[in-house]
Length: 68
Image (tube, rainbow, N blue to C red; front, side, top):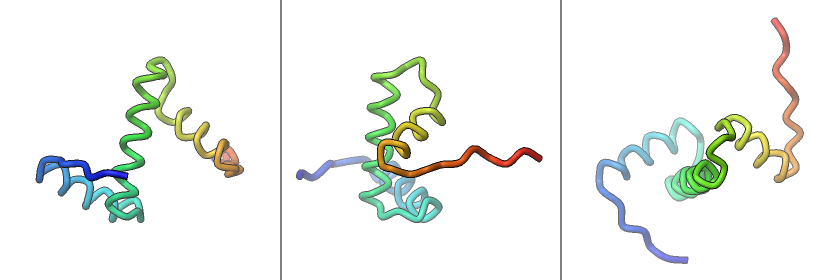
C-alpha cells in the first residue's frame, strides 16, 4: 500500500463524490482508479456494462430495472 499525491481540487471532488456515493474518500478513489483502468483496457465497453460485470464478479445479483 502506498500514498498517492493528488491535487487539492481533485481531492475535494473525491470528498464530495464519496459523500454522494456513501464511500470513504479512499474507497471512492479506489473505485475511480479501478473503473478508469477498466475503461482504458476495454474502450468499447460502456461504463454501465463495466459496473455490471464488476457487481456480478463480486456476487451481486443485480436484477434488471422494472419496466414502467
